[in-house]
Length: 442
Image 1: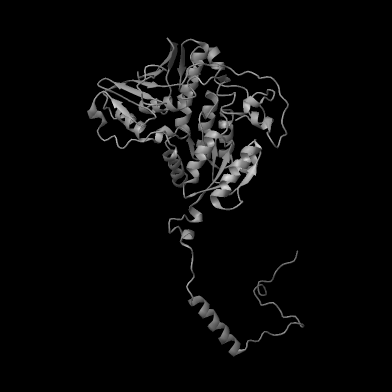
Image 2: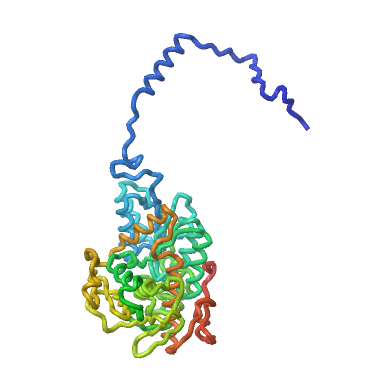
């Protein structure tokens, strides 16, 4: 083995015979030194936006965002992200070519370039190291699987609702974001709207007396099993990737009617929404008001066209379509021993006494997502927990799924949140999860 002598290791290398000695002319040296000094004396002009002045955001402070499945709802939420100065939208992944092109055109117009990349398969986009976060706005069938893939790829996630298909997925979602320490925000933007927050604080601060019941609007309590539509010729994969569109769902033949709006899988193999559609908004708000963000009701019973549930605390959850004040869509009502409050999407708040409304602030109607998007972005930077984080989303969705199971079975069920099982009820327990197609199991 060849060794290196420590005496020669740091010696200068021997000059070859064909090398000329380096000579420096004194006059040339002084001239070069003067030129260098003159260059260093000239102030360098750096645009303010580069360092975050003049209303700009320094590149190091920007959040690079990708999008997955940006359709009607996703287009609106994307607009909320694009208006944030610290967001740079870089890529779109969508199984539909027309939507890929539309999102790219919008992003390129926003930034005056052609930089927005397009992907048919979300996994290719998630492999990019420069993307910090993703907006997921696919059909509900994909929400949980895409969120888990994104978290495992090191991305933070803003995911539209409903976020999971069943109870098992709800717990898998929460566990994934705990394990990966990624930031998750469910698209339940009413958690960030002042009128809903004000009403919830009245309930949580005891200003209604002892809380007795919370009321949620479901926009329909019907449930049914997923089915097939007549087979149609399958389009070219680049135009619409039908297999990737199905993703975790059971295979079925292509039918164009399944490509628009909320698709066939809304949760637990059940369609029609039940408590999950608006419930992922309204039940979520009731969970917060009842101080139940880390649990679910223990009893669910469909009765007289409504769904009645009861928390271990004794507070009753009532999911109903009827009897609401004219306060717009997605209303909630909280009732205590000494008063009540009700609010909805038009931004108005009504209560049992005017004194309860002191300090309610300016009216903001129309359920904008701007506040919720900003909450998410701030947490991406601080690594804090946003209002609708994965734990919160888990339990509000568990409540909705359990209610849907009671509605589907058309009978009372009892649930143990600590064990995640329906008590002595094999039929209900089988509906906590469903088979997912390979390779989309989570």
